[in-house]
Length: 271
Ligand SMILES: C[S@@+](CC[C@H](N)C(=O)[O-])C[C@H]1O[C@@H](n2cnc3c(N)ncnc32)[C@H](O)[C@@H]1O
Image 1: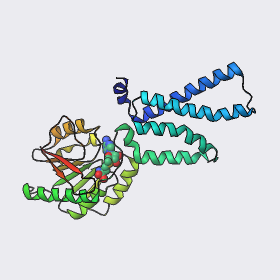
Image 2 (image 1 turned 90 degrees about the vertical axis):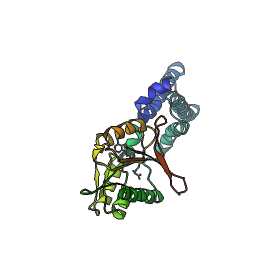
Image 3 (image 1 turned 120 degrees about the vertical axis):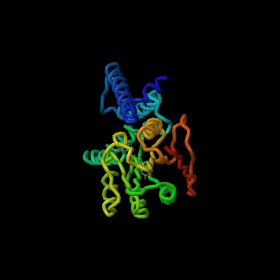
Image 4 (image 1 turned 90 degrees about the horizontal axis):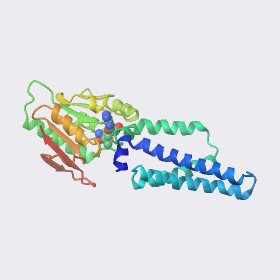
């Protein structure tokens, strides 16, 4: 029950809270130990104890993180983190290395915490399947007097967009992305294509009424809300396609099984 209530805080705050809670607990234990027994830092027994404090910290971090509802593989990360940080001290690395690592991770994965959507990429076989979907739309619908529009919600590094822009020049393709690193890469990849653009805007602030096909490859987390948005905003006859994920409670009109190694499924509804 606690787990369900904590879900709304997002992943990263719970990861940090697990580590901070462990640090405070171990700090409090160490202080009370010192008050009770006194500590001579030169004593080899005491010195060997510093390692034990770290292991204790790791165990407590796992316990708190489990209580905060983190999944099993995150518990392994939480256990390894204090030990790795402690070991890293031995190499005397300059502090800016950690800052740079943080900035890079944040630039690429900032949506993993807030939106619970990390970065992974649509594969080439699925690009081709999406290309076929666009061909089918051209044949089955009337676009007289205007160019059809494809949206990739959370366009990542822009691979899907660049492929479709190049192979389906009769379409305008638009990506929206808010993780800074992938946005810059996607924007650069769209530059050579006159029919492609990538916008630095949240998918939640994107008006879907101008789209003929909307594609999303996100995660289970936003699907309820996204389907609601698609139904509210997309024009009648338009197509909404989601790679792999769908809301457990919502029906879909059909699915395409892609002939790739992971047997990708593209779920869709016709508005
Ligand atoms: C799984 S990746 C898919 C990338 C790309 N569509 C593809 O198929 O190769 C999901 C992307 O959605 C982005 N994303 C998550 N939430 C978003 C939001 N609210 N607005 C815009 N982009 C978002 C993430 O940063 C990530 O790059």
